[in-house]
Length: 429
Ligand SMILES: [Zn+2]
Image 1 (cartoon, rainbow, N blue to C red):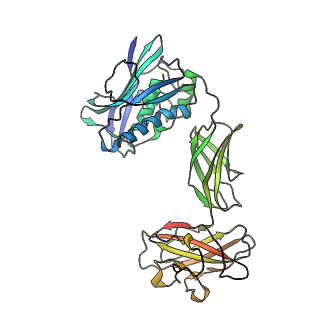
Image 2: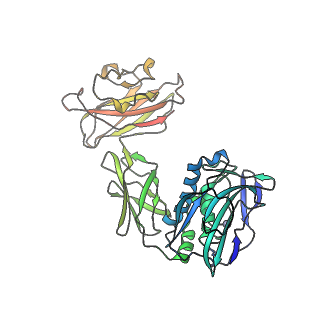
Image 3: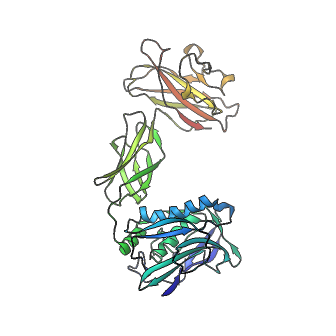
């Protein structure tokens, strides 16, 4: 039986960045790729326990600490895509390194004399029998501040846990820049939370490649744009293979799909004929993951960021309402009465627009139309579009207020009969 430990060491602080650098090499498979330690599990899973005993306020409470470390372990399962998984077995109060058969992750209020964190493992005939991961409080003359959302001088628990767990499963330091198993990491970053393809390749070398995962979509950022599409967005999720993914918004294929990692794709949003929220689906071969209402096509878009002392322009579209009368709506909030809550004409919350009312909701009637509105009332064209403008006076200052903008469409016979209150867009001045 032999005992090993990781070789992460603090080298020097550089301005706002702390750089950790390895001082020795591991036997490698390739001159520019992942490396292996020579140890690995011979089982498909390994249980581990967490002692959520970090004391830094920025580390969060016990639940937050457990959540960060679990997320790191789960990243190896969902993005490593090897035939091995860390299995969370609950909390523990253990805070000592020991070949006790319990794989433990904990914080030590001690000086590690260099390393930020260390992974210890024990082997028998090359087979890993036990590991412990220790996060240190400090090194000589320097205090490590642990965090869930690190600022410039804080270290990310989840990122460092992901790296150390990589050692536990048998990976050394990779020479690939950007890999979670790369030998350097900076304070104030969370980049090591997501595995690089090189990390996944290393895991798959050790444990074999798992069958393809069903893709899953979690979030899209930005999560809305006008009907024309064209926005470049980031689709987050899991199970994205490096080749052959397609992405669909409301059933329409996106273009320029680019793989970033097993948990991140970028693409260009396709045009839509559908208003409002649509599903986003990622397909790999016969496997598809779909999340309903993950993206919204806006009814309106600003011509540019709204400015005071300037004309501002808005394009609006209401699919299916071509040729119908429309009426623009503006409000400044407060946030208490979103413009989309207006249900019927005559709603007492609807206030005719005047300079004195600029902080209040307004619906614009022809007879009350001030000079600083352009085309706020009319008919949608044959493609259900219109454009209207509004002048924002230079004073009083509206800085910090949020401008909401939308429009109503009416029945053809009577403009007062509201047919649709469209979804609104907002901008903070
Ligand atoms: Zn390391």
